[in-house]
Image (cartoon, rainbow, N blue to C red; front, side):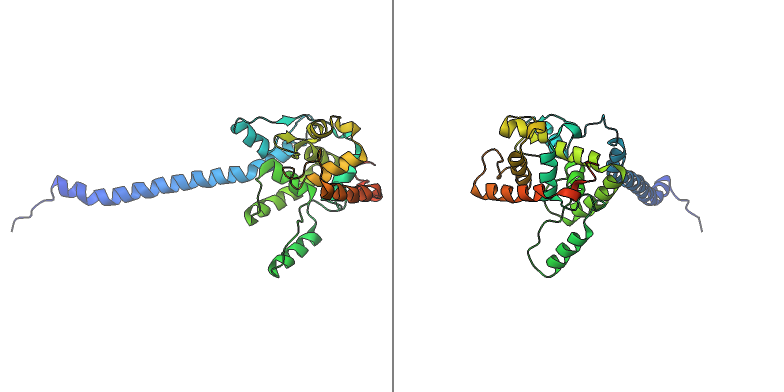
Length: 251
């Protein structure tokens, strides 16, 4: 009986399938590594920037500013050092946004637990974001409520509060906060709404700017309605009694 040798075609066809499968798996492994490295770089970049932003000559910009640049809208932001910001603003913003700013380490865990319990009970939740959390969101993340963003925001806030001094953190926050369409930072806000510098803001003006922060598109500090004026008066009274609450900034 003659033995018929394998033809070249049989040999090639017999190896084609495993070779193709091996090549596909190799490409998948390479792409998976690249994807993991890209994801790791994306997650690590904000922490690298936090260290970089420790230097006082660095003037960070927010993701919203970058958005305005990409969309060719432009924006108005004039950086101002902490020493050149009216204490009226600092007191009002703290009493409005984060009364425990000098006492927590980036996150107010007590307030956070209350929000979680309210959410689990099906109740309407109130905000528990601290100034460090809002700063982390403004610099590195995006607007809108989501558990993903909050999960990224919390460790960033803790690290920022640990790496930066309280004064540096407040300085960055007040220079990246949005106070209207394309209006970023306390100096641009003071000029836009009241035609004065950040150093010259009165108690009333500072309180109006502070209470407009949650939604500066609908809360116009320069043209406040009765509701906004009433809220500003409440914050002004709290700011007047702030005392020990702001010692970490004015020792």
